Amino acid sequence: MPSTRHTFIAQTQPGFEAIAATEITARLDGAQFIDLRSVADKNGMVRFAFSGDPRDLLQLRTVEDVFVVAAEARDLAPGFAALRQLAHLAATAPGIERAIHLVRRVDPRRGGEGRIHYRVIARQVGRLPYRRVDAQVAVERGIAARPDHRWRLVADGGIEFWLVQWPGEALLMVRLSDERMRHRDYKVEHLPASLRPAAAAALAWLTTPRDDDRFLDPMCGAGTILIERAHLGRYRALIGGDIDPEAVATARANIGSRYKPVSIHEWDARRLPLDAGSVTALAVNLPFGAQMGSLEENRTLYPEFLREAARVLRPGARLVALSGDARTLSDALRRNNRLARCATYPVLILGRRAVIVVAERG
Image 1 (cartoon, rainbow, N blue to C red):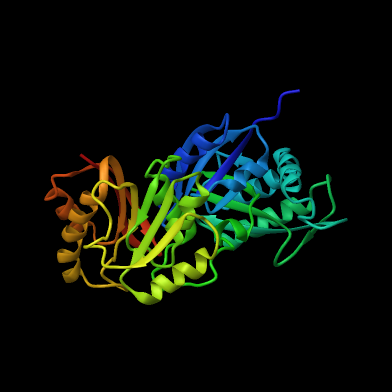
Image 2 (image 1 turned 30 degrees about the vertical axis):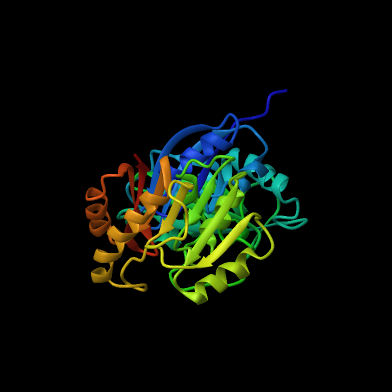
């Protein structure tokens, strides 16, 4: 018997959804991309179909949460009548039972025994005549009225139903992942301005990882990008460094004895002790000029760093850089005749506008 194809939502930080879509289609056999959505400035969403083991979805690195779509409504009334529609949808949609089955394939203990423990999280995009909590209560009542199980509403834990509303449209999902997908267990030490793991994974993914990579993060901070590259597949070597001794110590603590071969150095990224053409991929979180450095310092740092990056990169290698100082990065790239920009992704990092630039060494 062929497996049933379900529709899933991968949730990302804002702007990262297009990057996550490429990981999903590349790493999940048979996954079919459907579309991209956004929840205002809170999250990006990738909708895709997949018929494989749902546990495989939890291995995605550029994604922060995974949901299975339980029900959709595309003709919601414009006024308070929509609340009755939402309650009816939650009470009758057959997809809810299928979603719960998938959740329990991932974690048989989810929801408890006997009565199913559940909670509802509601989000709204655009102007609606009722409050978010009104929609939440409508869905809670609808689920409680379902005859397929006995239900118990809880404040925390249990199976999570997520309702996302746009004007005239609603999406009801059940969360497959838990907090471990967003907060990886390898980070024992933290630094200010450190990237969230899924964002670090996105930078590493955009370098197009290969088994023979000599992968470099020359401003490695807590080491998150290096660790995420290690989880994306085989490599020849991981190389990282930072000008700040505290960052070097933090990266070494987070990496520990894993991810060999790896080396972490204290250095200035503008003067790297590496041979010309010795690096096959580079990903870096540049100082935004806020928590770290300043915009004035960036105008000197960025061009000098890019010249050194071009020196150590092998021809054809990729450089992926994240920055909150998009203008300075663009100006520096424009003046560097050895690096050619090939893609740009506007993103939000903790509510701040930033940009990911992908360039190739000519």
